[in-house]
Figure 1 (cartoon, one colour):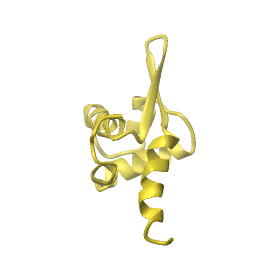
Figure 2: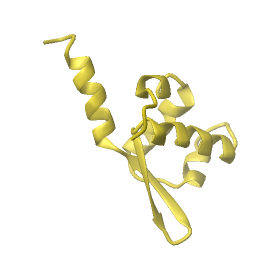
Figure 3: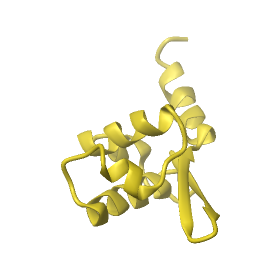
Figure 4: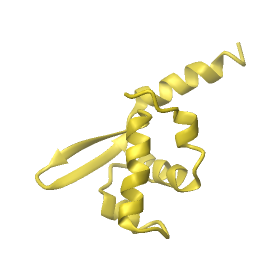
Length: 86
């Protein structure tokens, strides 16, 4: 995980939509792009921001890159948020 702020990453509505799609299961860039009104390169840029913030991870299967939710990134956000309710 880099130092990118996950709260800044989720500020964008397209990134939140990507996260909602990935919550339902792993997907490729093409699968994610088919659900959004933006280009495939734009989806790739949003995925980079989510990767940099530690909210998403990726693995390769042949020539395909499969994206999925990275729970530890969300665990860190939850820990920060939980301090306000304790």
